[in-house]
Length: 590
Ligand SMILES: Cc1cc2nc3c(=O)[nH]c(=O)nc-3n(C[C@H](O)[C@H](O)[C@H](O)COP(=O)(O)OP(=O)(O)OC[C@H]3O[C@@H](n4cnc5c(N)ncnc54)[C@H](O)[C@@H]3O)c2cc1C
Image (cartoon, rainbow, N blue to C red; front, side, top):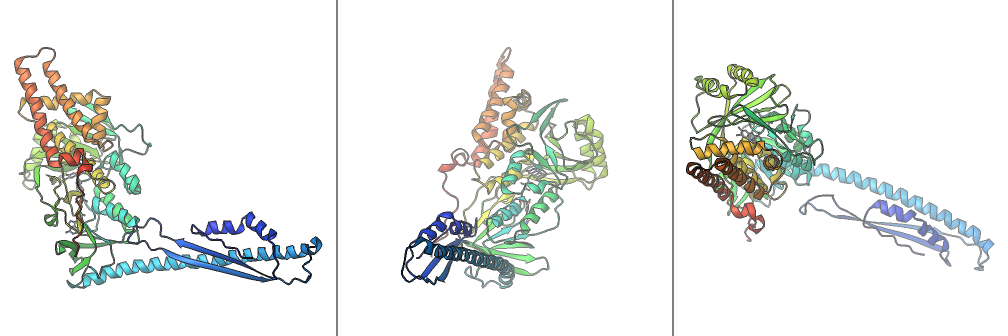
């Protein structure tokens, strides 16, 4: 008798089949005329590493043959079918079957354990290989060809929000990643401190939500808008989401450090401190990077793909895009200590003159203040000009509840500045390399949606989410900045009043702002609804020729704000992303 059990799923199902009642019954009821009965169990267990990308997929097939031969001495040579005589005979088969099953079970258990141990050992060896390959390929200078790969699949330059999250995501997928970061100590910056709810949702999807835990991050539930002594509260439309979903504000450095740590815990991610000095190009394809290590050595490393995430001051982007960087303004950063914001757990936007002022908590005891100062020339911090500007021009526009804390922060003297750069995405597709994050595309950080955008960008199709956020940021900054032009003044007031209406009039724009609604059409509709609302305010109750003229200019001015931004973002990319050809060119065929 020969029995074949084959399974390609798992050893568990194999055990189930082996021990299943039909099999036992089959054995018991089988006619057996030979005194030698053979049970052959053949199991082909195809073992695949779960969720690994195709380049890593290594299918190992273990064919397991288990043969149990049982010699059964049949004392009855007459082949007599006497039931009484068959009874001990059957008993022997039952014992043999049980014995065979037990033996098979133990054998498979041992085999499986050995395989697991082997796999663990192999993984550990692979990881060691990655680390040593990185070092080896780095030490080799110039003559390393891409074939002598460094053992990594992706080089990531920079471990800011984009690079760290990307490294973690790729590493989790099984890619071998080499991250080179200029400075691995905790960053101390005034950027990237407010994560919109849309960004938090992306963190959850990427399995990084614990990066906002244990860093004294504050929940952010919406915005409060202030203009000419009036205010309005705009809550995020979070009703449909889990109670945990909200914005988060924190010290940027603490958040980034958590993301770096998280990426570094993955065995196939290597985080190294070093400054990338150039991209290594061969026949138009980026093959790797040259970098300087912490101890000053010049090294090279190679990988099939290099992703450049070196931030807003990127030195490497020039060969990968046509950067047209504008600096419309700078943010001047202060930290207010132990002060209560008028609306707890809300970002505060003051529509000040000449441009907005922001306040939001970054810990349980600190509030970040960012004062927008238009133009490229800033009052000097060193000479005290800046402190004077803040006290005389800005402080009177700060809500009275927090004015004293604001002045105390200015007096304390820890005034920091950061240019607000804007750069539309304009990539030059280059085989072997990609740009991401601020290195690729920047917009005014007024909406604080950049972190969300980068978490989104490698998770799903970049457009139109990024375009919506970019357009909104650019348009809002212009609408919220004061202007001597009467039409622009009307637009600013119309925007404040429109948002104060509540309901769909605030929910729509706020869901765009929070990264919860990526639809560009919704943005355009709300933007022109604000303009029409502004015209309505002018014409009612009695339209005069002057008011009609201002209304016409308001529409023209609104168009003048939004259409150039949409044009820069790309109309097709924004509204018809599916019609845009893939930006990644296939590497040239040799
Ligand atoms: C004043 C200001 C406030 C902002 N506030 C917010 C906010 O509240 N919310 C929000 O969502 N966004 C905000 N933004 C935008 C946001 O901070 C950035 O978009 C985001 O930090 C960009 O992330 P990144 O990873 O691309 O770059 P970065 O965070 O700048 O990271 C780049 C990394 O690359 C490293 N690096 C640079 N050069 C090299 C090199 N040659 N070799 C190796 N490593 C290198 C750097 O050390 C750095 O760690 C703000 C921006 C500004 C200017």
